[in-house]
Length: 610
Image (tube, rainbow, N blue to C red; front, side, top):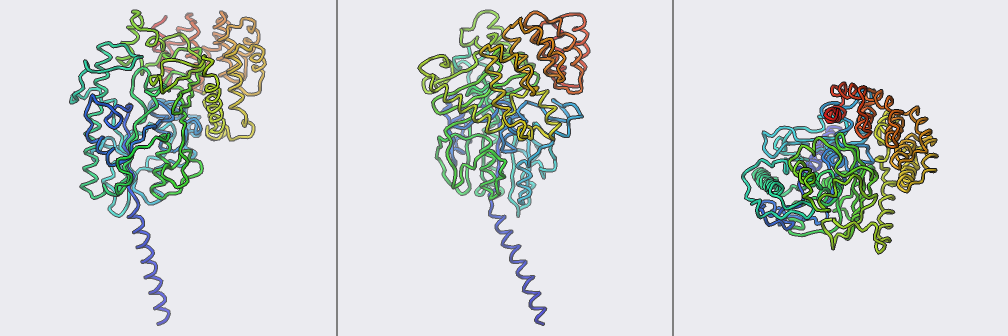
């Protein structure tokens, strides 16, 4: 009898424990992300008056509006990869747009696929482990289907339980990102924005086609506003509104010439409105600097989930939160366009570091060149109808450094980097940026074909700069870049013998950029380097000093390599080199059927030049 009583006691105790745990689960907040594509802060809470965003205004009245919210990358896949992991994209190795994929756009060489697997847990996995229902929806309708991911890594689709949170059991909280097309809804005609009343930033000309595009962009916000209203109604009708934390944010800035893919505020400054459960902090504003990876950490924190050490975002509602007064951002390869930009922003200043200052801002890019605004701007530029500011992006090169006084020049138009009065500010921000690049283990200065092989060697790109032998790679790469920019030819020639292929790549590149004819012999020798990317850099450098015939074979032989990134760099070198021989034409024609999407894009563009 006593035994039976003890057994019953433990059974009741077990049920009581389960009941308490279930009750705790019930009390945890739902987490809803509303992530909008291609849009900047042109809505009511941020002072926009050309359109009426009543639902967004109501969300701001019920929540917190962040006045200094930024993304760490101004393009969707890199930004989204950062947000879903809570990590800076250039730390994780997912900084190049549409990279590390095994299908679709950006599908890369199969021998490298194993190294593309995410080396950390992304947020839906952490939420699932904590007992949350996870979903990912396109739009807000239950019929929307699976939402946009665009992650630059391989992941498990089953990390999401369903498409819509309405499928969530009543006894579980949910983590649910909604993906809205936002600025991509340029064809929505339900808006009220009048093109004639549009005021464009000064870096765009007051031209009818541009004003019409700007009006269409603003009108796209009206559809977002309606979708937000529908999302709020779903929450209210289900009885979940009161206990749901809502994060309203865009993946990057508006898709315009100086917006998406650029580090100016038009590209990286985004709206962020947070509605907390039970009306907490309703109708308030915050000025501290936050990014989308802070949204990731904060979402975990509100759910009571331990934030992993590898997350680089901060929970901005944590008791030990230290407000930031600075935001870092990075732009790297976008599709077939190789680029390396870094920036640091404070309340008063923006510093942009152009690590490839020898090419124009408006490098050829199939995606951007296909847009009406870019076609119009190129047409106006060719006709000489742009002023100096508006034509600046078409200059053949650009300054190594850009510094803007944001209080007096919010549109970032007057570069103060060469002004002695701002030398101290320039130095301080440069040091901040370099320190961040080193501490965050920024992989961006490693040429991508080389990084591809390193990632394969170490299991993932994330592991590359964690290796002891690579501990000083970031400052070493910065140093060789600076030597190139300053024309330190002896240092560059020495760099060609460095054990690091990334150093050798940049040494060869800058010898060519500097037009150092005396380096011909060492560059010819470098065309036999054991690393493909170095051979390509040397061949392109030779073309820049008028000796393209000495490197042509190297370029043409590499386009079909199993390292598809090396092949893309090779055909890119062919485009920049100006080599237009019959052998080059044959290689370009063949490359139009290359297995790599971005090699094909360059080949298609280049074929018209023969």
